[in-house]
Length: 107
Image (cartoon, rainbow, N blue to C red; front, side, top):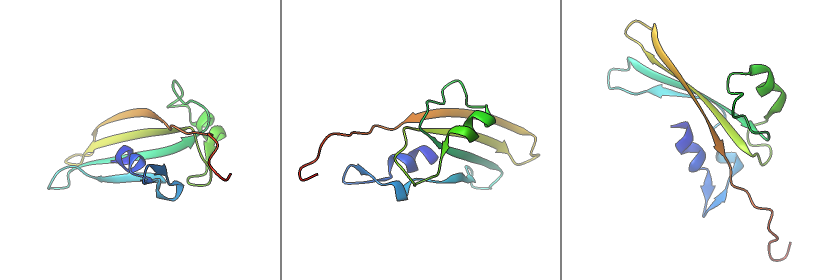
């Protein structure tokens, strides 16, 4: 869900910072609401691959959501079985933004 919101943050193919998901995205994945997920989204200018669990590094390199063009998003997801709350799994991934500094007409 968080990745689809990142990819959808655009208008006519141009990225829109104000549409990016900030902080934590969460929800339920079944009709009864017992299976849930949370995804923490971190925006970074340095490549986070290999540092997904290094909270100190993330804090030192994190960009304010929507404040400036960024190079990467780190997504850390936890899925939980709510029937007893003890079964969970964690996944993390890196999304690399495609940006261009090509000159535009008139600018």
